[in-house]
Every structure is written in C-alpha cells, then in structure tokens.
Length: 197
Image 1: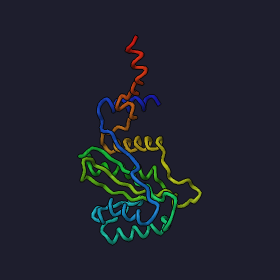
Image 2: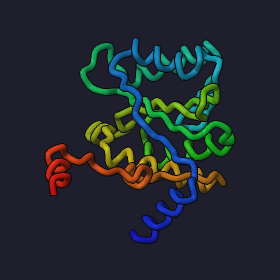
Image 3: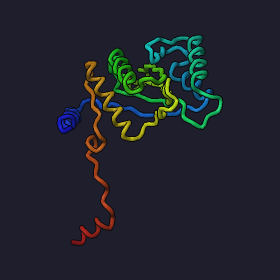
Image 4: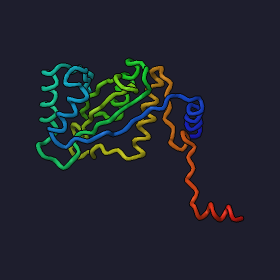
C-alpha cells in the first residue's frame, strides 16, 4: 500500500518516536515461568493485568496466578515453548494510560484466545511493558503455537505504533533501512580497483 508506506516514511522524517517490540525470552517449565512473573511483577509489587482485564497484585494473587498458569498450560517438563516474553517499549515520558491502552488493544487483537499477563514499568530509560503470552490457543489444541518470525515482529511493531497513535501518542515503526540509510560496506578488492582507475 503506497499510502501506508508514504505515511511511515513521513513519520521517520518527522522523527516520530520509534516503537520497539521484541521477544526477550521463552518459558518451557514452571521454574522459569515463576522467575519471569516475579521479575515483571517485582515480586507482586507491580500490578499485572490478564487477558480479561483483571488486576493481579500482591504476593498471594501472584502465587495464585502462577498456579493457575502452571495448571492450565505448563507441564513439569516440556520441550515446547509454553510462554513467550514480549517487550513493548517507547521513550521515557510516554503517558502510562496511553501505553497501557495501546498494549491492551494490541494484545486483544494479536493474542486473541491466548492467556497473557502484562506489566507496566517506567523505572528505566524507556517506558515499557512486559507481556507474558501463552503459545497455545486456549480452546483449540490443533491451532498452531505462537511462534513469531522476523516479518511477524515487524507487523507487531506496526500494530503497536498504530494503537499508540489511536491513543494520541505519535509513534513510528519504520524498517531499519529507512531509519539508518544503511549501505553495505564496500568490499576491499572493489575499493582497490576503483582507486586504481
């Protein structure tokens, strides 16, 4: 779509803040799941929000959540990825309400019918949210597991940027080549031939 590409390039030129979406890890067993949930919730001090919009906070609620997630999806031993850890990031100062809304709306569409919890953090150089999302469909065992490729991650970045803009936050999700005007380094032999002529 030429119009969409043009709009993305305009946002790059106008220096709209670039979104970041990346998979930071994967969970195969209950021990790893527990460590990740403890980390993103700061041991129960930071509120988690699940796919139904329910709030989970405090050590007791966190313990109950871990048990629920373990019982529903994480076997004691698995060679499959049961949960993905996805990070959504924007520059510091991005309003919390808009960030939460954008991530929630993105997850409702992209991770429909999968279990997930999200946590908001603003204690680093970037405002960000951690999402721990189940790879299995809640209802259909035959549905392919969530396994994003490079093209999926770019689409996720675009989707997240769209949701931010819908919530009043200027955001861009450009391709790397548009952001950095990349050129492949010239091969030394080619450089020498050009220099000799």
